[in-house]
Image 1: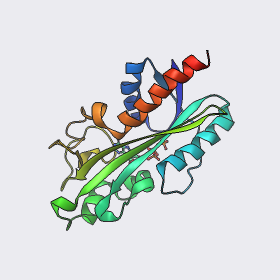
Image 2: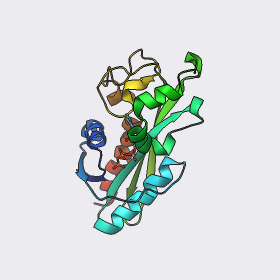
Image 3: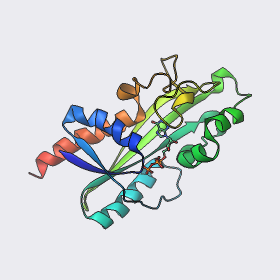
Image 4: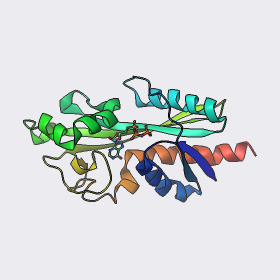
Length: 189
Ligand code: ITT
């Protein structure tokens, strides 16, 4: 089964496919740029985005909105994660957090996948808890991975991206989508 996934981020496609293959689903990248609304909720941004893309292509499709929430920064950068990554980067985030003690460095990644087929609109959210390291470590993964240490691990996702396949926010959101889609596909047969 092929599912269209509108994104400019090839890492999202690669990671979605790592989960999709368990369910016999392949995600195919399409690049239909959609305007991102301003909202604090990833689900709302993804839902509005997927409706826009559907209107353009008239085929069932998913989009994903994701980002990182850092407690010591009052949830910043949240839904502005892509923009802040470009403007400040990991060094800028570490600089903002230079006086924050270990126990207050908690953070989480959130991923919201939205599906729309012209009638059914659904969102699937996944989260992974962790903390922000004191330096950039590793070059695996992408984005904030070199400064994110998932709970239960010592290494950042940048040093060891392997656990992302099992525990990441995207693994969880895509997996719940896949479970839904397998059933959806049987129901429409
Ligand atoms: P599309 O909107 O085209 O899908 P994007 O990269 O702009 O691609 P988002 O608007 O959803 O996607 O922003 C997500 C940002 O959050 C991403 O660019 C990273 O900065 C960060 N992010 C999300 N998931 C991540 C992950 O698994 N590892 C590292 N950084 C992540």
